[in-house]
Image (tube, rainbow, N blue to C red; front, side, top):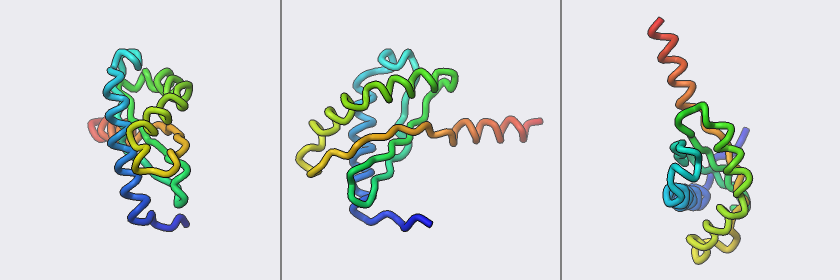
Length: 115
């Protein structure tokens, strides 16, 4: 079982989430083929060296292409994050993007309930 995140981990995760959301927003929807990308959650490792970034993508038929774009541009995102948060963090964490499927799941449940 995973132990709960420390207060510091939670604070750093929240700041990374805000910064990444702003970086992604500044690129605009056109950069992601017209898809809307939202940073839904960030989880940081205890040593603050790795950040798992959960993103939700709308419309869902663009998920694969957007995830590929995010993966190809990891260094760019990490660089921009370092530029924004460099003074607050000793090490800019390595970013790993994950698809947040909770919206799709909720939509699926809603469809099932309508039947």
